[in-house]
Every structure is written in structure tokens, then in C-alpha cells.
Amino acid sequence: MKKTIIITLIFLFTFKAFSQTIKEIDSISIEFCEYLKTTSNIQNDSIRINRFYQDKFDLYLNRFEREKANKIGSQLFYRTQKNCREFTELLERLYPPKESVTRKKEKPNTNLSDKEILDFWNRDLFKYFENNGNETIVIIKNNEYKETFTDLTYSKLGYKKISNYEFELEFVESNNEIRSSLSLKGDKYIYGIIDKTENYYLISSKVENQDYYELFKLYFD
Image 1: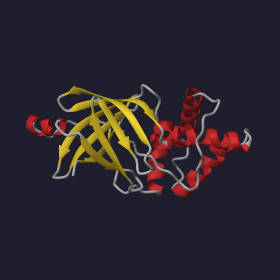
Image 2 (image 1 turned 90 degrees about the vertical axis):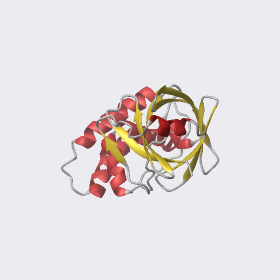
Image 3 (image 1 turned 90 degrees about the horizontal axis):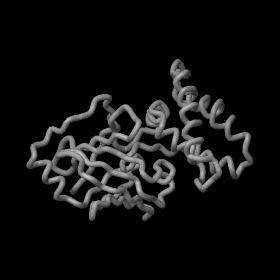
Image 4 (image 1 turned 60 degrees about the vertical axis):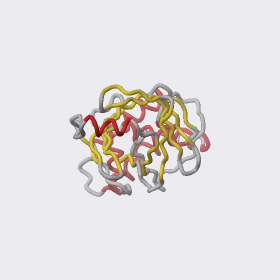
């Protein structure tokens, strides 16, 4: 479940369970996103994100005692990235990922032949790189897509082929801090096999309710 996520030193929290529901957190993150859109006239990204934190994150979290604020702030930070393209892209400009991120409004079609796509379906071991350069291992087995991260935490997702060049992932569980903040059980992601080089496939990824496709490299060598 590749998803562009930026971790910054400006806003770092420790995640634990808390009383606010995901529905409440998502509602707040969408409100934050609408505010961020109104600051597009600020040309300096550092000034813009500091203004955003002061006017929204800090103002909201200041109503809670410190420990609770940390718990709420962690998931709010990650869910805002998931729900707000403007926030994600602002963070990417400030903290560029190791591999460039490409997003498309229109659904990408595959450039591969049936034979080339069959080669993908016959593989079960892949890897991809997080924005900080860490390598994540992917094993596909028995309709399960399992990711193992460098800290040995994991994510498990259901894996289902839905067309000749597409598959669906459904989030099951994760003990990884970021992934468990980003996804809920039952969340679905649609992947498309777009192209192939000598050591990776170009994959498109779309999250439910988002209006764009994100492209990334899924390595097999």
C-alpha cells in the first residue's frame, strides 16, 4: 500500500489510541484543507506551512492537555495528508521525497502486452522505497499483500485481481504507526500495472474518494 507520506521535524507526535473517532478527525482534516486552500497566495512555503500550523493545528490542539494533544495530533497530521492533496504537495516541496512523485487526474492505461502483464501476476516478491529512502518488502501469497518495513513492523491487506492489469487491496491490519494512522480496516486501494523496465513496474495507485492517481515504482530485482 504505497502512499506518499512525509514525516517532518516541525510536527512530530507519538501515536496512541484516543477518544476522538476517525470520522471526527477526518472532518477536522477536511476543514483544515479548506483553510489551506485559502493561503495559496503565500509564495513562501515555509511561511505558509507555519501559518497553517499556527492557525489550525496549534489552535485546535491547544484546547487539550499535552498528552491528549500529542495523541490527537499524530493521527490528525497523517489523516490530513491522506485527505488533503494541497497539504501533501506542500510537504513534498519542503521535504522532497527520494523518488519523485507523479500524479495524474485521468486514469492511466497500461502500456504492456498481455504476455508482459502475465509476468507480473506470476511474481510474488517485490519492494518499493519510502520517501525517506527506506526499503519496504512486499510478499503476495494466498490472496494477501503483506508489507514489511525496515523497523520490522508490517501491514496486511487483502489482494484481489479485478481486471487484466488492475488489482484491489483492502486494508486488514498494521502494527506500523503511520500505516495504522492512515488506513482503517476495509479501506480499499486500486492499483494498475502501467509499464515495466528491466527492474521495476510502474504502478498507479488510487485511494477511495480521491480524484487523482499516484504513480510509483514497484521493484522486482
